[in-house]
Length: 459
Image 1 (tube, one colour):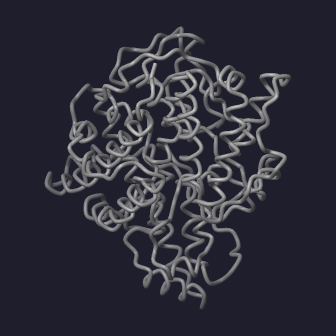
Image 2: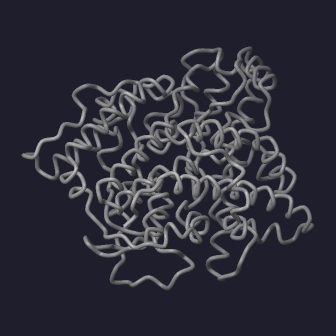
């Protein structure tokens, strides 16, 4: 995925957490984890018999109208849950609570639903699929303009292929889930903060953005797609704003909606909401989304922060650039491997890892704590080793030179070609590390699918 350039630091609100805030402000421009989630989700889920069914496509407005009262009750229960379970949760403003009303127009009901979830009012939630790149060539007559699916005017997703599906059309559940697993990156979590330049930000009640630049829309989704749950206590003491991240909220919202959809005979939306929830689970398998600064200890962060506070900011500035460059380089390489395998129809180590279910049984049963205690903890623990592997394998200019901006040049960098010239054992070290991370990605994606079934009908 192509990312925006690292975001320039805005003035610090306090001096004590200056380095951490600067790191995250500079890093928030790379708030997308992994590349195209759908491409990876197809491989991770394609052998699940649970997803071999076909479901009838249904417009969002039909689901909302048919289940108006049930949705009102569900979202009220979700609000109660969030107030008790989510650290630093900002309560939903009472005027945004979803209220069933058969006299509402479809457009008003949709608007109220998005507001009650506190997602962008520009969210498309269109009827579409992103076709499996390993499948047959898409029908040109079915192509959808990216703006019909994606609210972002300029993004890597503008190059994705989207196909129209019609109400009532039978669609593979796999395609629904895989496609939706990429969808939260299409603008659903942008500009929701009080200091964002948007009406939603003024009314949604999330308060000011905890980190990042509120005037740069890409930056504003980061606190919904990152979760720093396992840092040392001293880090939270220095930077309490780290607790103001909300991927767990999104997972709960969409999984509860999915269960309601399955229970009330709307399997298309059961799988669609499952895919939306899956996105945030997958994001937290990325070490750079589960740790403030993988590879750097709390002692080092505090030391560099102290130097910056006495007028020596070079080490702080260098760390920000390197953190962003390593994340970008990892995404560039992973994306290239996945795309090349699909384009050439060549089985790959990553594909085999995503298919491998041998790890699945080793994880605990899905629960409300699973994403925090299992998914993000595993990614956090993998952070230092991942960082070392990138430094050991990739050209030093890309990952160890703070004078180089990877984001500025990523479109012209071919890491597969460059790494083909190095010692195969050296490249294998990084390939193995990425394969391990994608193995976690696949296992947790499948765990979510299985948790959604729980004896429910799927068609």
